[in-house]
Image (tube, rainbow, N blue to C red; front, side, top):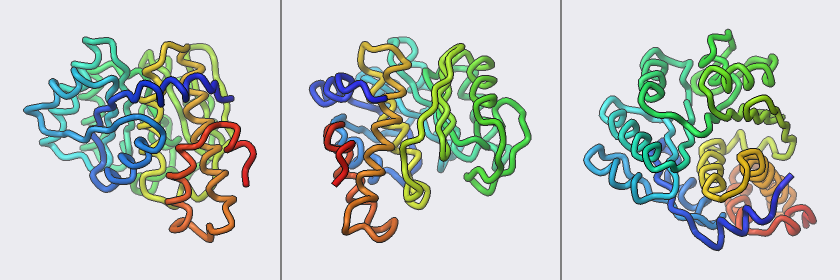
Length: 258
């Protein structure tokens, strides 16, 4: 379900989202967020992280290509957002892959209260000590994703999104499912990262967090379905530019397909 007023609010207000993000996907995420209707800034220097986050409307922390030097900037940005009651989206990319990533996420969460934790099943399962098969930064196992989302939401006192063929969104005692989307999203580097950015933008409205998260995730999936259905799309390479285009469309266009 997409609450169209949330999408319109983002586009009318053009919120600034401060990204401390995977350097592999910066260009894709920045262009995708611009197409959606918000404004990205990519700044990971610890010397400016607090100031940049203070002036932004939301913060997105993603540890995809984390280095030791970047960790203090992520913490500073997250703390500044918390102090100003601005949303923080945390994406624990590949947290189960190495002890360094796992320890870094725990350090971030000692200082920063995320509004939303978004990750695949393997990443979120790791945060609540549930065994799960992973390959690098990807999740490969199957299991009870709804239970994982609920356990993580309870443990970290935050909303949780577990992404997959079906996405599970947990806000307190409520769990919602989203089945929109397309497999091409798993074949494009940054598909999950861009979703986190768009979630951060939708969190800047005055709506309930349930409506904000459902709207962001569902809209994203509809845009992927629309792009994949285009007659000129033959695979992930041709899907990518069509998807960025689709993120700029309205909900009725996306639901109408081609």
